[in-house]
Length: 243
Picture (cartoon, rainbow, N blue to C red):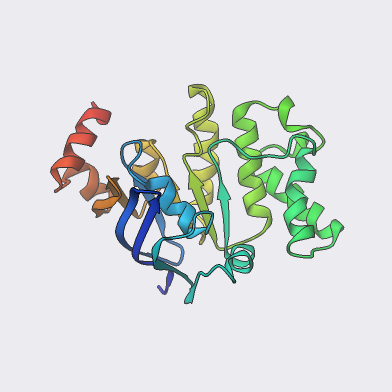
């Protein structure tokens, strides 16, 4: 498979804080990559650099053969990637349907009719077609996150990035969001997901990556990763959270 994402020699500083350190990573088209690691290890910053929500200090991110730059990153984001955030990031003054049709109409110049049709299909997929006319504050956290995933589907981009999509949810709502993501993973979408959900990683990932202190310390298939990790820091981390 061709590479959809290539990250080469990526460094990111916030002031004096060196958050990402010489990251090299390639993700094939259609691959599902799950990134795990302790808080503050640089996981979220890494995927925010892939979407150019954070500008790399040095190194480069290449999407489908084109390097991301200050000039082209908005156009590239419109074409290639959508992001699902920890805090849903829905517009509170718009209905669910309004949230889903905004980007296709404004950014991708789709007609209102087409955008509504696509939005309703996406809401049906996440089991929320009946909530199209509701406002986000009238939905549970799990429903809001499912709406956010439906919104990511509406732009029909080949890459979806998930930044800890279940960490702001009550425990009983986590599974309803994971179920939607597990369904999505069966398709030829390229997915990078930062998460603490180890069961999800085992079930869905083609590759699991462990980060600590701004570096990738371990990567492998779920079987290798969970049964036979090589890096001592990774073994220690897994021992703490799996037992």
